[in-house]
Image (cartoon, rainbow, N blue to C red; front, top):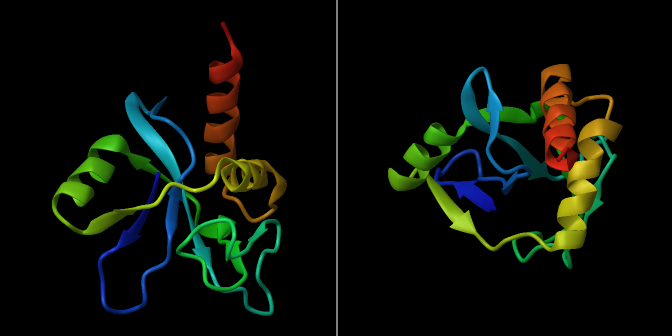
Length: 126
């Protein structure tokens, strides 16, 4: 799922929910990243282009340093309140690249990497 915050300034960035709900601190959470225009010191672990999503108009990077975990209830509340607007789903190939970058980027917060490893382990376990 992708969404954009509904705000005038700063200009909204596309956000991507990378996981299904997964238990964290006894509540379901999802992992969220956002895309941004690359600057000189940008993390270039994953660079996406205009073919990866209709929202992307120029090369964009995943801002792994700001990857976060959010309660599912908060995601739903913000969508229902109109603070966020759903966008077109990301192509599967692009989504998989972004997901792989969670563990590849040295800038991803450790808590987020730990959550994602646990998510993958439980997803693959019988």
